[in-house]
Length: 446
Image 1 (cartoon, rainbow, N blue to C red):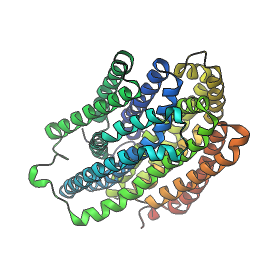
Image 2 (cartoon, helix red, strand yellow):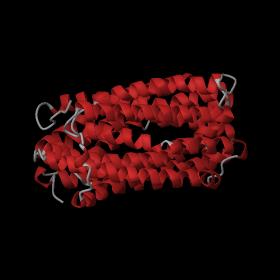
Image 3 (cartoon, rainbow, N blue to C red):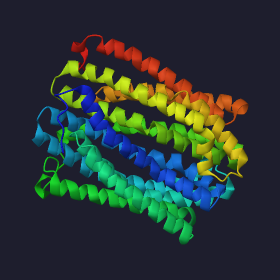
Image 4 (spheres, rainbow, N blue to C red):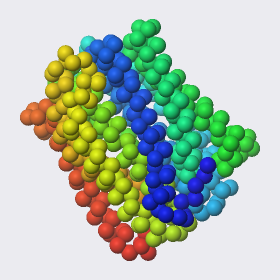
């Protein structure tokens, strides 16, 4: 069901829209977390390390596609808010056709290069084959990831964040069941985990498409509406490449950091794989509020309601602060119990490394939350260059400080580096906010 965000209480709208997305992001994290838990417990720490090494490489491709969908969703939201439904449909068609072609091409390239990239980042020989097999299977299913994210983003752009959650829930349950069948009973190893993920993603994409074409005429495309609008294509590429580049840079940074962690050995890799999944899980709601803020800002920009954007931004910060404080306390206090969830109690060194990292990282969760809200705000009003610059700045600091501090602090150096990068990002975006939003009449300039 579409939601008009240009009217009513901003806090209520943001919460109502964000809650399904929070659960959706948490479910999305469960894809990889389920894989990690099952692989780590039933195959062993080497398999867990293999999946962990593959994860940032896989994420570069997946989140490049996700970035394309985010950029498209901003345009769809603006057109929806402005009431230009015919133009909006042409935008959906243009982005869908071009995005699908690009995804297939990228999938083939990634399959060919996966082993070379693993070797480039110094993946230990003992886990190289498993990591390569895992990646090739995941890359083979990228088209399902694109289709789900595209239609999910399109539905969210018109205010429907509940429907994609329902399909994702089904997919997540299927992923868990299939992962147990393929890994535990059929003994297919890490390949079984990857196959389960691809099948589950395929199910979620098919369900999403079926819903759009049977229940949602606003973005449903008939055969004669499948066209590429050259005028819209230029704007779509501009929005999409910036958000795709931004998402990709985040995971290129994580890949480079993975290269810093790998020389510390299998225990460190297994611990790092576990703690980064915890971070992703706990920070997922922040991404949801960013998406909520982005859609809210985009619709209100399209409607020309400037004051509502500032009001929504302030209320979103209050909400994310409350969530971040609660999350930080949970992770700080429960760090050891969380690590024991990923590995057996006998893996003492893995647990010790992970606990130290988690307690340090949890201190910075609130900073990440504030950064996410600013990112969503700037993205929603079309100032994508600000989000890109801030992300590049944060990634540069993360990688450089990880390299410098790793000899002294081990993988805990990554926590220091990420936290300092977030603080720098917040200072930069906060300064830009004061410049652009000091007077609301500057809100939609440029």
